[in-house]
Amino acid sequence: LIHAKAMPIERTVPTAEDMRAIAAELAGQLRAGDVLVLSGDLGAGKTTFTQGLGAGLKVRGDITSPTFVISRVHPSLVGGPALVHVDAYRLGGFAELDDLDLDASLDDAVTVVEWGHGLAEALAPDRLDVVVTRGDDDTDETRQLRITPVGPRWAASGVRVSVLEKN
Ligand code: ADP
Ligand code: MG
Image 1: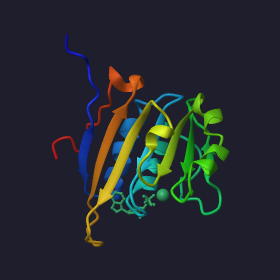
Image 2: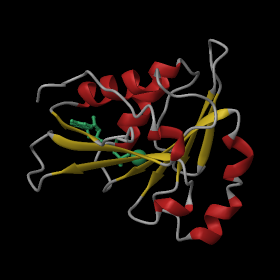
Image 3: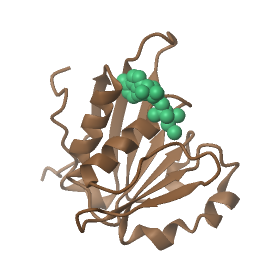
């Protein structure tokens, strides 16, 4: 018996627009209750990726890096799931994360957490781990993107991205 296994997706992403396009395509495979955990350094492209998700889900409001608020809800414009955008990059630890009351939003929204590094498993057992990395050269816009489906939610279906498939 060969088990269906969700494979990671890897892309070399030349521009911010490409990053948004990948996320927008991914959005079509998301449903209420799904969680994405975005890891990567400051300026890697986590918020840019989230903008693509917002476009694909057709939600209201600009998706930005909030300076003071940690979490924003973007309601759907088309009767689909809302996008809950959590910027936890600067959070000190899990005590503060508990204060976010993440669970309350999980069931009826797609939740995206911008996260620094590590311990994503504490956020949600079923999730898409999205890691964005960049090289040392600040003038190089190229990013490496890896999307890893984790948990039973994704075991059978996995995710599909056709944008930049051959790179
Ligand atoms: P983060 O949320 O990870 O701190 P942001 O998405 O806010 O990062 O910032 C990424 C910046 O890099 C944006 O200004 C974006 O336009 C730029 N950028 C340039 N090339 C890319 C790329 N290939 N993918 C994503 N962002 C890119
Ligand atoms: Mg950000």
